[in-house]
Image (cartoon, rainbow, N blue to C red):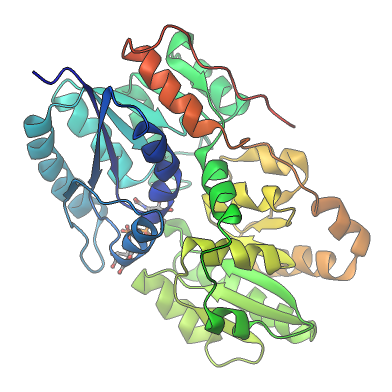
Length: 386
Ligand code: UD1
């Protein structure tokens, strides 16, 4: 009889894959555990790119993505698919990451089968149920459904405690995004495609942009693009490189407003190692992404967060990120200041590691092993470098 403890990891989008990959690699080191990788493929191309890079082959692939999918459609397709797999596989623990619809549905499907749930990157909050939408609600629901919480920072630990989560179920691990970042930054054997290298214009300061959030679709995305047009036109020594998400609604606005414009380069979603390379070569990052807010400080790059709220106040507190909202004039003003004022720039462009130290996956797996009765001690805690 197989007495190995079975841990199933469920994810569906690129950011979840980035943050789950280090945990998969760490789990696979243990002979007394059986690791199952289940992808909903809420994203197809953007997920597959990443799986290839990290050499991860899913055990199950629900392949649910369809064009212009609604939240209801993602939820119902993933819920039915996961039910079948959980009944067959009977994992001892399901790990879910973050706050996407896949993350929430994984917790719900596990709960329906009375399977324990561990939440990676638990405790992020904006305290505004519609911002980000639907992610803030997904996070809260996963906390309610979950059993084990892997908190990236003391701020997130505090949020969980405020929500009434039992202290013993919280493990302060750091964020696995830093594990993934350090791994990729160290892989010099993975080539950067010549066409990416060649797209950077010599002598120009690179403004790297990325935006895709649901609450930013439509008018806010137009504002973002307008700010980019104005910046590039007023600062002739800059080049805008925009990595355009696969969401058709994002593409319509971004391609519609920015394609073919001078010193503006639009890229298809790039592989993770290319994104890291672009971040390293940029002067300034403008984004609404969560992961990039975490990666920027590690790479000593100022990040302007084009959102009204952030669940990641640590970078703002450390002085490496700034919340600038979604009005063109505000985005323009904040970016222009960093382009004009060397001192203001230097103040933001400093390395800070409020999100992790590269040991988060090890701590997460040790916490899982502790909880499953495979080790006696709780893992050490991530020490916050404020
Ligand atoms: C999802 C997550 C969001 C996360 C983001 C990262 C939810 C509700 N949102 O948002 O939290 O920050 O992923 O990227 O879970 N598409 C493709 N190919 C791809 C990926 C997407 O064609 O590889 C298209 C599909 O037509 C899809 C649309 O993009 O309908 C939007 O994708 P969806 O997963 O619904 O939401 P995202 O905006 O990507």
